[in-house]
Length: 621
Image 1 (spheres, helix red, strand yellow):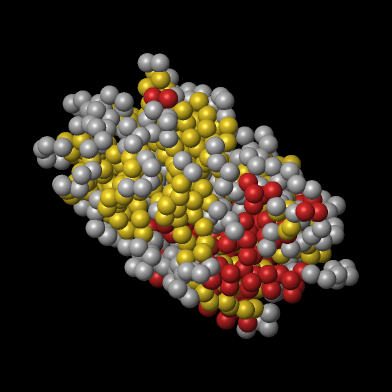
Image 2 (cartoon, helix red, strand yellow):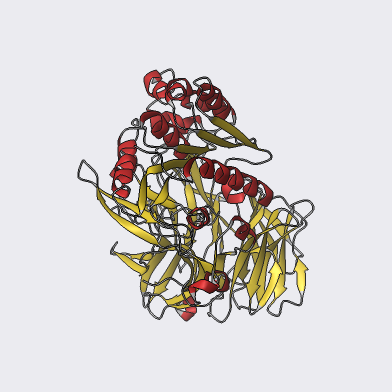
C-alpha cells in the first residue's frame, strides 16, 4: 500500500536530508474526533517549540487552530470541548468552544492532569479525568461533581443514565469495575485481576466492553476485549478468546502516540453489534472490529500503523490517524467496512515532500529454530554517503512491544547521516502470538539474543552493508541487550545504551516495579540469584571490549541512573573506551516526552559517538 503522502513528488535534488533540527519542524497528528453525524472532525497536533523548550499541542478543526489537546465534539456537533494548558505552571483546564472557535468558556478551574473529556449523550455534561479522579461538569458551568477518586478508564452509558469506570490495579493486581447513575449511589460490577485499559458502552446502554486481561502480574500476554451485561448473575466474557494478538497495542516509535488509553468503540450497524479496536499485528497496527460471532474483520491494514481512531455512527464513518515508515501520520477517513478511504489532513505532507526519506526494506529471515522473524533495513537516501554503509543495529525496549511500519524519526535521522539501520522484533515482542511474546520469560539473553544475532547475520549478507563497521544501540531493555551483545560478540565496533537496565537485582531494589522483575525472572533476586547475576553489571561490564556510550536521564525512576554509573565504572576498569552522558531533568521516556534541548543533547552525543567509531575506512581484516 502506498504511503499517505509521497516523498517522491518533488525532484530528488530539490529535497534535503533529515537532520536533528527537524525535531522542530515535525508535527505529530493524534486524537481524532468526529461529531456523531459526521459533519465535523478535529484532531490535535503536537510539536517541539525551541523558544519555550517544551512540547506544545494545538487542536485543529475547520481550518482553525487553537492551543490545546483532547478535542471532543458535542453530540450535536455545535461545540468542541478540549483541554488547555497554562504554559507557566503546566496546569490544565477544561474549556468549551463553539463551532466557530470565537466563543470560549472555561468549565473548570486549573487542575492537575486534566484529560479525556467525554460528552454525555444528551450534551448537558462533560466527564473527564483530573489527577486520576473521575469528575463531571455541566456545560453551562453551574454544576459539577466528583464521581470516583480513582479511575483508569471510563465511559458514559450510551442511554445517558450514568457513567462506568475501571480503577487502576491495586497492589494485588485487582481492578474494580463500577457504574453510577446520575442519581443514586455507585454500583460495584465486579473485579478483574489485571488492568482495565478502555471502556465502551453497548449502544443500548445495557452492557460494557473493556480492554484488559485477568492474569496479573503476567507480562507479554494478550490484552483482550471483555464484555459484561447488566443482568443479575452475569459474569465477564472474553470476546477475543480465540484471537492470539494483543488488543489496544500499537507499534512503537520515538513519539508518545499510542501510550495513552487505547480507543474502543461499540457500534450497532444494520442490527449487528460491532466493537472496533486497534491491535498489534507483527510490525503493523491494524484497525479491526469483532462481532457477536467472534470473527475479526480488518478495516485499515497493510504496511502501516493505526495510532488512534474515532467513530461517527450516524454517518457510518471512521476517522483514524495512520502512519507508515515515511509518513509521521495523517487523519484518514473510511466507511465502517474500510471502503472509500481518503486522507483528510495534510499536516506533514509538505515536510515529507521536501525531505529525502528512507523506506523500509524487509529482510527474509527464519530463525535457526524454524520460527519466522520480522526484520527490516533502512538505507541512506540518495546523496547520503556511498555503499557499503556502516550498520547500526537497533534493539527495541519493553521488552514486549514491537516496532516496524511506523515513522521513526531517529531511524530517518541516522539514515540521513549515512548509516544503514537494522530493526526487528526478536522473541519477546508482541504482535506475533502470545507464545512468541512470552518465550523469554525466565530466559532473557537467550532466544532473544540469538534472534538479534541472526538478524545481524542476515543483514550482513546484503551487499550494501559494510561487514566491518557495525554498531549496536538500544533503550531500556534494548540497552541491556546492547550490553549483552557488546560483551559476547566481537563484531561490534561501537555501542550506545540509553536509560539501560544494567543490573536487574539493584533495579528490583531501587526501581518502581519489582513485580515486573519477579514475573520476568521467575522470582526475586533472593529466589533466582543465578538469573539476576547473569545479567548483572559485575558479570557483563568486565567482558565488554566494544567502545560504549551510556546515555541516562537523571530522573529515571524505572531504571535509575545508578544502573549506568555502575556499568561505566565496570567497563572503565578494563581500559575499554566508555563515556556516560547524564541528561538532567528527564525521566525514562525522555526520547518520547523530553524537553527539546535535552533531546538535542542526547542526539548530538549519540552522533558524536557513532561518527567517532564508525565513519572512515573499515579496518583491514
